[in-house]
Picture 1 (tube, rainbow over the protein chains, first blue to last red):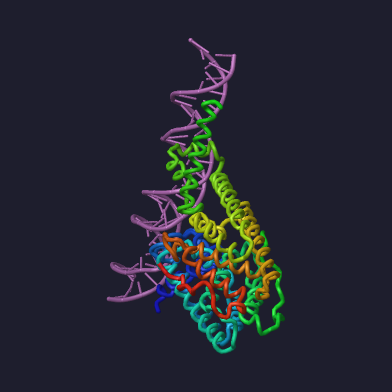
Picture 2: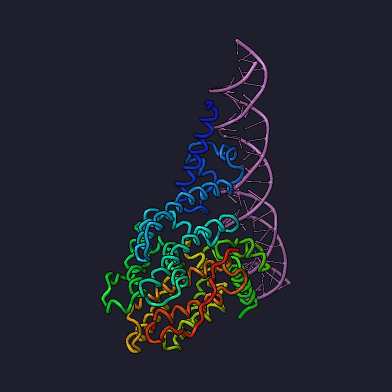
Length: 212
Length: 212
DNA sequence: ATTTCCGTTGAGTAGGTACTCATTGACTGC
DNA sequence: GCAGTCAATGAGTACCTACTCAACGGAAAT
């Protein structure tokens, strides 16, 4: 590869890294091209030699990050075979990339077009897996009859909502860590309430709602 | 009241009405002072004679609307005495002001300061009532033992998440109407699974998740 | 009738945004 | 060695934003 090509690729990567870093901490909607270029240490105009519009840069970075993160996420949950463990593994992974997921959840309602489709598609793929696992638990383990897809949609709606409110609920701490006990406990309660005789493995957590 | 005072009050009201109308349809974050003034039919500069900054106008309009809407909402749910009916009444009222609630849910994660506090305070007041009603049901009706606050937080998290995704999930239709059967069904399932012998009053609804 | 008052006006300001393009100069191919 | 190439530059453009202020003119006070 020629010196020129190496340099060009390097600059492109600097821009992508800068955009990624800024986006994850402050959100995709809030960052400007001038800021991205400055953080990358290149001239403002250079950005537009690599990405024709701001939107294309944002889509490139979000798309790439989404692919990486949701592939890993899917592998993490596919390794588990019952609902409780799948949920636990899911939450642990989310917590490890919490800033990214929080930004996505916060801004998704404001996206449209390609970005929204891409994210919703990833979400529904993950949810399908949970429904499958939960249905399996219901069928095989004599758990409470419940509509698997309804329960999964509820739980994920709640998780997404907590993630979107991360800064208000947990500041710089992990909001997932804060709500995980509550989610595990409610999973215990909802899915096999009869068999445990009122004794659940997960203790009742504090209310996670707090206003900062 | 003098002619001048009447005129001034009228102009102020025109601005508030215009801001309210635009905000509910497009969101508080998306509207500009120029647009508000134009819709109200007054000069751009006039706006700043009534409200020193854009933020103060937004706070005034949101605050006022929030007071009216959440007072009504509280009265609606306070009239019911069991969880199922309270939830049903809640959803019906939300549906009647769905655009407003959708904007709030969509933008809340992006607010801070006073606005966020005000909205979260209202939310928690409503949730407290639900927890009270649910705890009462659990204590008196021999329902499944479950942590009332955990269940309520889950359900409200899910509802808020669905509301924030209104446009993607239901376009101009009511997203609450779409998810209400699912929520009622899950309430039936989660709260008294043993007593009904597997026969629930609410039929299983279609998956509400659809990508537009 | 005249002066003072004050709500309204809209051009103007300062600062932001995404995006452009002539110029530069280091690298490439001959 | 030299002409041609092209990534990088940064001042410049057009447009948006919230906000200001001198001027206006009808109402109020005298």
